[in-house]
Length: 206
Image (cartoon, rainbow, N blue to C red):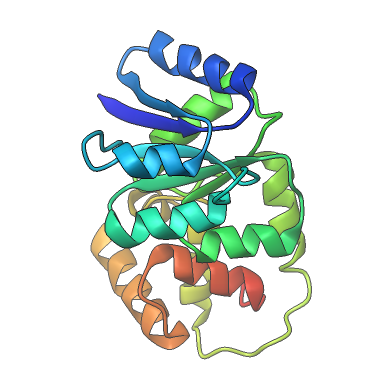
């Protein structure tokens, strides 16, 4: 069972998401909030696996709330659900700990697939957001010490692939993927997948 909480100030969207999640076997919405403050007050006693978080919230913003939550509960995966297309906002959200970034026009199937994907270690993005991110790769502005294979691994990591999927696409073992990612973290001076993805996008390393 995947336990999900929702933070969305639009009651119609919030209720529709809760109904959707509860209608699918293997998923349960355990919290539905109009703001980060309510979630933060209850999260310790009602800890979800995945949070769908609107980025534009009254009071504590989605990104600010995510930073507070990830600091205290680093195991919780957070997917930003938003209408924003600002590249800098995407980078900031990912760098702050977001595991995925979906626009609110995403179909219900994509939202459910993304919850499962992030729960299994992926980093989902809707096609519109992914295209915006990929476009930032077109001109490389900074040389890095990454090998070509490490760049391949990082590129797939940025695309939301889990370690097993990266291994299958590159025809290498999961252990080898972990080894490459360890080297990537060291070379980029980061300590997590979200930081590595953020830096790769921000500095156009792949």
